[in-house]
Picture 1 (tube, rainbow, N blue to C red):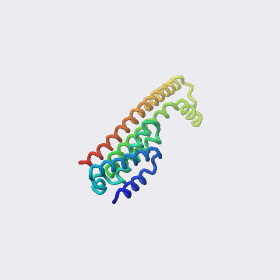
Picture 2: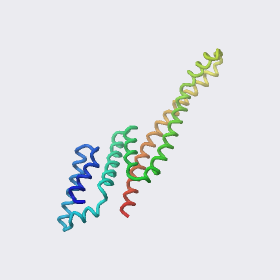
Picture 3: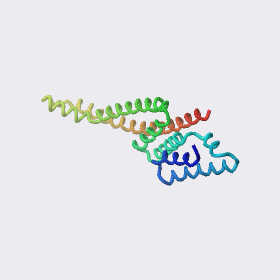
Picture 4: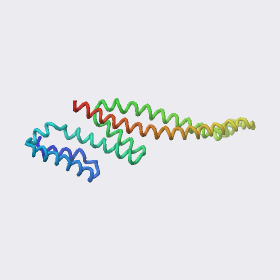
Length: 186
């Protein structure tokens, strides 16, 4: 593979990046080639010392997705960052996907519990209407209202937990990229 082929393949791998970021990366690699050639190395030696364009592209795409997730914190950007990190290797699937499925499942269960608690007065009334057994005991409604308060508190706790998990996921993805790059270097 020569320099032109390497740079063309790298640019194809970076096709989903915004144009300005792609141009910046391409300029850095062209500058790297220029510096190495001025030190007396030929393009085949330079390419031999670099990783494949596909691997470089996946790492840059993952870093860009993680940076985007840090800048715009929402579910879409974090899923994009996770998916970009998954493309870096088969080990990433085990390291990233299994914990993310577990965390997502746990968060959904907590959210459903919160929703159930919050809607408990409505569920009590609906149950009474369908069973033709409307309760006039004040204690039932007070308990239902207290469950609503518990549901709201649980929802707030879930929101705070989601923020923490979001930051933890980003740290985990950054760590994963460093680990993969470190194992590739050694």
